Length: 345
Image 1 (cartoon, rainbow, N blue to C red):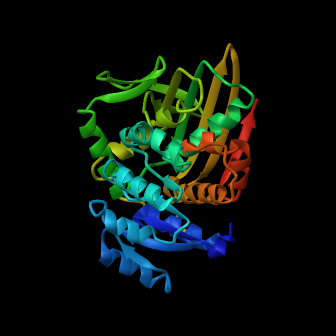
Image 2: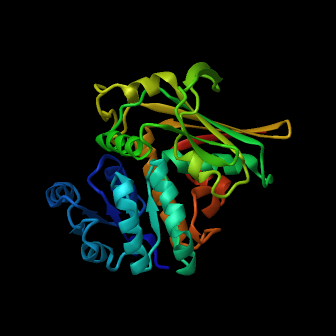
């Protein structure tokens, strides 16, 4: 493998909110981003602020355009939602090109489809496909895996999201609508070792976050991509996620504005605490991550994943979540500039 500086990485959906963070992170880490996506106009606009980068418009309904976009690249990061529409075609293109695929999908159904539809083919091709390599799905999976340590199974996993606010991007809103339509408005949870669809109202509970956040009202069974990533490789029959009630209200309100940049990196003022509790036979292990801006932090997660795949620092082949593909504790340590992590045993 050559140095990062010699390696081109396609960012599909490069001009989207998360895509822009990914392009910036790739540049910072010495990669050469190839800007791709379906809107040539938005690609040209983005390229104007990054002179010299290759622009390759591509559409998921035109496999040839995807093949041209991936030509000569070392990897592809799919940032273009809704992933129900984009994941499969871009994975197909990655398999044809023989390059690793990473996406930032938070859509539960799209992530399930990736595991279901591509597990055997990706393994047979000796390829690595890593869905949900982002704040939702990837980060918590790394935290759960690191917290479990030497445990191979646990009775239950609880993941509580303490978001100071949640200003959803247009992409988040679209993805939410697609997911709701796919499950006919039902809710989803992971219990008894399986994904269940249900009609019950979500409970409101109290969760004791570490200080300075403290005890907060959370919405229970607020299922995110974690209910796909964690059980994909860990023997845990119960995976429950919780969302700070004020962030859930922000997300639900139609008039909540999109994120606004407050620093030179383009991050919003939103802060987060992800509090992971793993229980097994009366023993509890805990991991806590803190940082700023859930969209911005998806970029170092995805780019670190690509770097590890390209340098052979992986533990899996086929379709694999973050915790299965990488040394979780080591990966989290590498994110030190972006996320502070504390293990509580």
